[in-house]
View (spheres, rainbow, N blue to C red):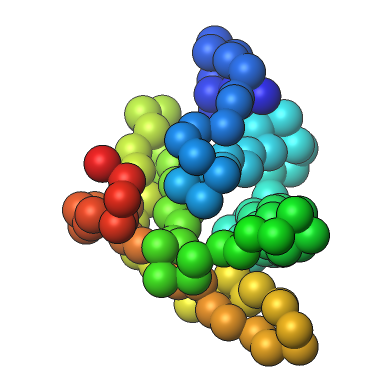
Length: 119
């Protein structure tokens, strides 16, 4: 379930695309205090590890070159208006598979990119 930061929009989330071309969402809007970037990335890492393990157990695998993530955070102006926080955290998501760790890197919210087979 996705919920906007102001709790005005709530919607169920479903798998998007095929098993190897999907988008995952991770948010903690209801947590108080709000998690910092490191906590959010750690949560994403747990989710992607679980997804990798589920795919592997059914004969599939994540295609690492197609994997990336965005960390979308809001900051606030002095008069209370939100704006998209820029920058990239120095913490990739680490995927463990067959005792080998492979990093997945964050993409900037301000840089467009094309992911193979995802249009």
